[in-house]
Every structure is written in C-alpha cells, then in structure tokens.
Length: 193
Image (tube, rainbow, N blue to C red; front, top):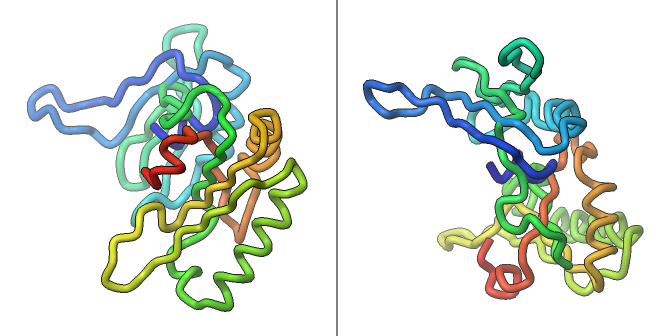
C-alpha cells in the first residue's frame, strides 16, 4: 500500500483473499481518486523488484466502463493497481520526502560508495529546494538499522518537498524506478521509518 499511495490518493483497495482459508491470493485491485494516475502507477510499479519477486501491474477490465490496474507478483495472479492506496505515511504534503526502490543495502556497505551515493542524491535533490537534512540509513553488521534501503530528504518548505516528489517519483536510478512519498516530520525525527 505504501508503494501505491506514493502515486496518489486511493478511492478503493481490495486485497483478494481465499474465502476458505482467508489467505491472500497474491493480488489486489485498487482505484485511484484521479484516474489519470492509473497509467503512471502501472508504468512506475510494473516489473519492480519487491523482496525476491517482481510486481506485475496492469489495468484490469472491471465491469463495462472502468479499467482498473492489477498488481501482483510473477508466478501468482495479477493485482489491479488502481485499487491500491498511496502515501501510507502521510497523505498531505510534509517537508520530508521518502524515496524507495532507489538503493539497495548492498550498495551502502562500502564507505566510499556510500559517500558517492550521499553526494549524488544530495546534488540531485537540491535542484528542487533547500535541503535541511539528508538521511540514507547505512547497514551496520549485527544491528537492525531502521530505514536501510530508503532515502529521506527534509526540505525547508512543504512546497519544495512537493516539487521534489513530483520530479523524482517514477524516475530511474540504477535501472530501478524510484517511488516517492511523504512521511511526517515527527516520524522522520523519531527515525520511525
């Protein structure tokens, strides 16, 4: 749902479950409030790596008039993407931007590579406003570090953060599609990623 919400507000979301067992069948159907977001979400999420699988996101024909995207993983039934929600952490703009699917924990292991990534991200994100703080949690062997694999940028204003979200969501970084969403300033300060 966090991935879906990064594209826009959802009107509906339905995780399809087996009626006998109550377990997920591996797909869901969603509908965005703004139907123009559907194709953007399908393009941005289709074939994205999620865990050890890849998402399949496509439109589904639901009824006679509505075309709904389907989101699922390869090897399972497809899931309609239009029925999946967006911005799980904060639906309204905040000053903090969260970027997903941009870096992997493995890329952050080496100090030199970590510094290069930090500089590259800072340089690119500063094009959209004044950065107050940039956080890229670094893995630490033997410790559970919250937010590893995510990028957090706090901008001076909500407007700057909104401009950055629109500019960065759906862009490619190392052949991965970047997913952007807001998180609250409180969660950012508490490192509740």
